[in-house]
Image (cartoon, rainbow, N blue to C red; front, side, top):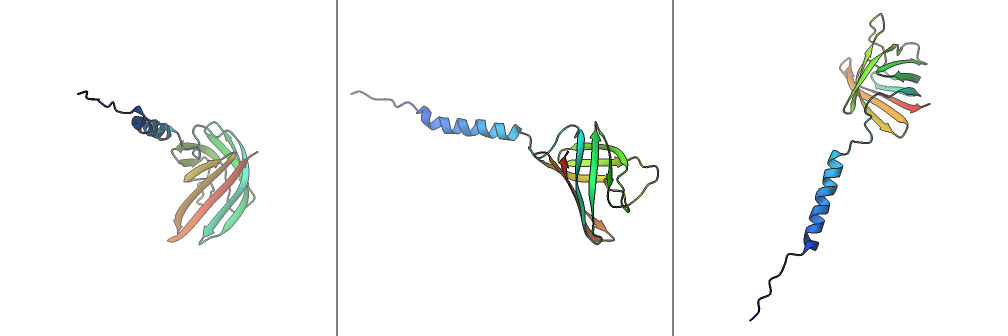
Length: 141
């Protein structure tokens, strides 16, 4: 009597190996919507604030290395100039204006997202204990 020993099929192991490789690739891939390094370039678009105070303005920003400068159409809120640092999905702006101003745009920490040649900065905060949202929608020029 002959006994036939059945070998494990390599077909059964292939899907598992494929799944492991694909999982490793995706876990090491950076989120395409989060920029890394310096932004370098000129961006223009809109600023919208909603909540207790509503405001909107046309914005133009220039990024060179880790520094920024800009201007906006709203005379009450200026941008000034300063530096920025991107960490993960956040961007932190430090303004270098000679006089501290609570109404400066781009001061503090924002969430950052990119889509193609567009940048989006947003943050939610409390203003006079009421919710407030700021959104910058900018496109490379």
